[in-house]
Image (cartoon, rainbow, N blue to C red; front, side, top):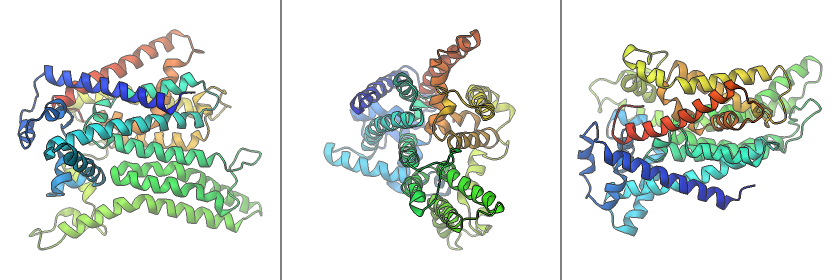
Length: 442
């Protein structure tokens, strides 16, 4: 079993090597969009700016501007406020310590926070994997955290992006949930028994953490299915038992109360953003005519901006001019789809002891993966799927299963291993090049 120190050193060492690699990629190739230099010229050209300016590309500019100037116009509301506030706090400390300007301090804040958050996420992912798969070898658990370091979206984990903070919060949520959930007693059929209110309180702390994740990125809301699944299961079983004359009012009350509480906590940050934006923009004094998104019962600026500026909607991404990016994102979809099918097939039979589907409470985890898969395929930008799944441990479990499944030595499995390694190498190198030099990616 690896110690926390070993895991942290592994994470920091690999992360620094990736930073150095990305720096040289940026140094050797000219930026596609030279207008980004105007942003960099707002601060002095200190050594920190020269070394870390490649981390401020694309959406990083929105996060940095929001951190220091707030929400000046409508489009910025696509980016929630927690990460910019987090950046501003860390940058304020670095400004005081090293006498830096705003731009240099925010780059340093992004670099330091990414190193720390990634190291903490590594420890959490290792512990989550051990909780989920107690029969798996330590080699498998360690392989999972190595794969996490080389996540296909590693360019964004190195950047001034919300990826590192969001992933840390999600991993903390999962760790707190699984650690407590496994202590709840089960019946002979393996179903968790929710016989008292204390059995339901397992969801409170994880849900509070999840609420924070939603304030970082809105797709954190989908993770409520993990904590909500066992509560829904208990509710349905109680209804089935009531048909058999075994109705339990306490179970009914507790499942409804805790289920609604978890949903309420999860939605609160998102609703607060909508209300806050509506109170600013949906006023006669702000526009001569209210924007179209103000007409709803709850004005939804977030969905409006996603549709207007990023063309997010049902099958709206699939156009001929995006063929390259659609093909580029196919491997992620093929990988996830194949494992979803394997999981559904495993439900018909008892999974093997060392199968990744034999892990503790895989139902709720796979439910999240399935939901996110369908959202990615039908609504989101296809090539962004690597970012969406970067905070899902299932991705790293699937990859580790392909690379370290020694029981399957077939030619097909060998090809799968080669493709998987090529996939990781390709996305890391291509990601560094495209992101650092401001080429279109996501």
